[in-house]
Length: 144
Length: 110
Image (tube, rainbow over all chains, first blue to last red):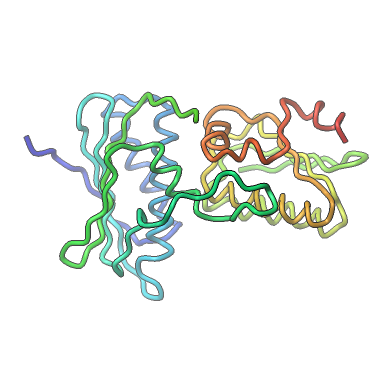
């Protein structure tokens, strides 16, 4: 059966984050996710949406859409779509987590965290749109 | 996010509460920079009240720690728990920062 997605499109900027998170909280509630899961979902959305805000449209601006559907109790399907430049955030390699504090690169941890928190993450470029889709399972033990 | 500073004998204690995200992380970094530019070498950040941290927050912690290290100082974290602690564990940053259970323990080590 096809999932019915709830959708919200807003300008791709950091200022839109609180509204996207509030929107996704309704999905988290519908899927029966715990407050801890909801914070983890916030983290995933923030990392991916900050990427879009930074890279998708520069130097122009445009919208980004967040869509979610309840897959099964405790699991959300999420899609994040923009019409910006072709950009696959999943292409970057794994950060080196073994460096000392002086040598540790400042960036690169966002997508690493996303990968740890979601299942089946995928990127596609279709009809001039970038879409990142993933399953967000609740109740995951996050410890490394 | 709220930041409440207390000047101690050998360090400044910064009590951070709320959420450190893309919007608020620069605020933390600026607060730390102000103390560093006033000559403070050691910053102790009490995180009992931190509910959330994203990679933007991690960037700020790393950047401040590297700045202090280059001046023979240190950034000391304490009271990490919940999701923020798990984020530090997943990224293995828990092993590269000085982390204590409480501010009292951190102060005693200076």
